[in-house]
Image (cartoon, rainbow, N blue to C red):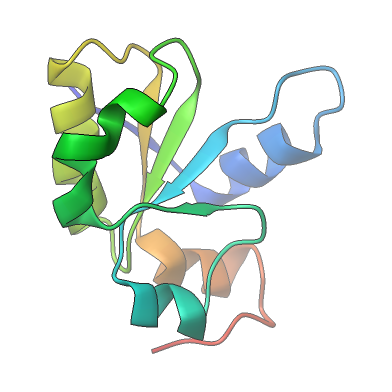
Amino acid sequence: MTQQISPGEVLRRLRDEGREKPLLLDVREPWEFDYCHIEGSMLLPMNDVPRRMDELRKDAEIVVICHHGIRSYRIARLLEHHGFSRVYNLQGGVDRWAREADSAMRKY
């Protein structure tokens, strides 16, 4: 079952100097990413993931991100199916992130 992670927990992991930072994988469309995104995240649109997943480390901690958490959940499950073992879905997506972790982020 795909693991869920809250914005607060992601923020804690990003700020923890004693651990490797998770890969923030944003699977939204480029226009959405241009409008707002979590600093340091990598854009890989949902439809491109199947043919480009070999660009990702299977052993990396990956937090998959979309607008509300639905597309990212599907991609997290896909990655798990292909052997990625440390995958998390950001609960509520960038919408929740903007409300709980970064109030300056633009919302749509």
